[in-house]
Image 1 (cartoon, rainbow, N blue to C red):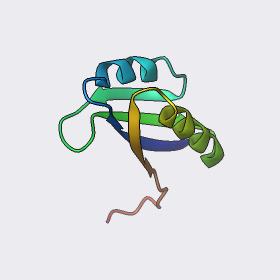
Image 2 (cartoon, rainbow, N blue to C red):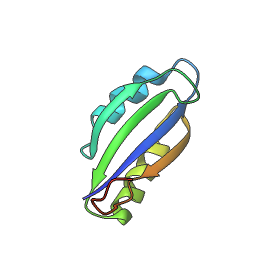
Image 3 (cartoon, rainbow, N blue to C red):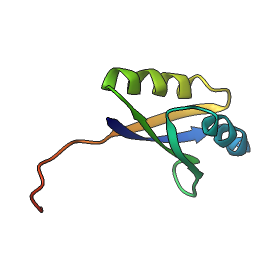
Length: 81
C-alpha cells in the first residue's frame, strides 16, 4: 500500500466544496480544512505509485483547486532514528 498526503490550495471561499468532493473519492482516507499556506489536507492510499499519480491528477482537475503539493510516504527500516 502506498500512502501520500496531498496539500491543496483552493480558489478563495471554495474550500468546503473541495472538501465535499474529496470525501466522495474512494482512495481519499482523510480530509480536513486547515489554516496556513494550504486550505485543505487529504490523505490518500493506493496499491501503487502509478495509482497515486492518477488520484492526484483527479484532485488537481477538481473545480476550484488551484495547486497541490503531494508528499509520498517513504518506507524505512524499523530502527529508531
